[in-house]
Image (cartoon, rainbow, N blue to C red; front, side, top):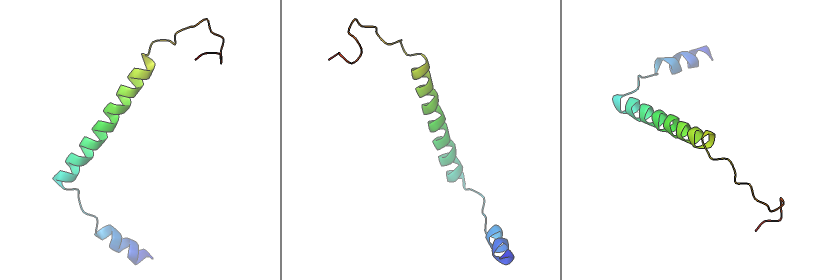
Length: 58
């Protein structure tokens, strides 16, 4: 078992430039999207009050 772990650790390679670009781009996209979603939810207008009782609307 120990020799298998040693072989697996010996084959680890550093990410390529394309890998770094893809990873940074993907993580940046997700972080920006989550920030945009939080902003939309936290700055949303309050719900409109109506005179119709709950459950009796259209």
